[in-house]
Length: 179
Image 1 (tube, rainbow, N blue to C red):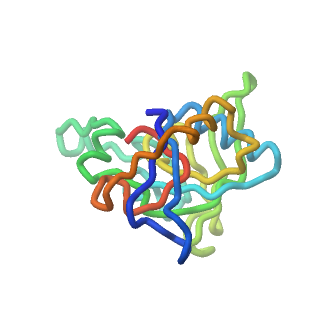
Image 2: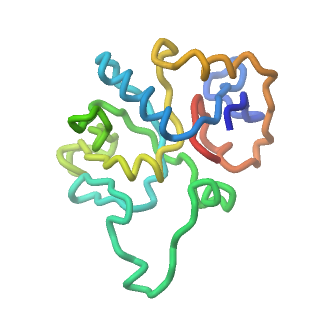
């Protein structure tokens, strides 16, 4: 956590160096995303869309479906371990457009614009519940003015280059939660 990384051979722009990122906890990710949205600056983010989402309703909610009761098994596994076992990684990108805040300023839900067309979700928009963010959001790109200095300072560390086979390397990252 709180280290400067890059993935070997993970370039999304020809001739550019690999993207660098800092692995941070989910709570500061939410604060940074919230700051960007409140400044009227939507952001690119990447998720694992393989779990707990409804194409029909445009809903992303942790434990949306109760598979544990249905199958009589415990599916509890941490986000970090899902990543280690290659079951959790960024595989789909969308735009984070809005945030629903409780009276105390805490995030409750997020408005997402997906790229799957108007026939999916609510005319292409999705409601992402805050607990789903904790479990399935891995990456975002945001303007540095929304990132606290203590997090930005991690980019001054020597970069640790992770091999292309490392969990999560299939998606280029700029900021990430536990992996």
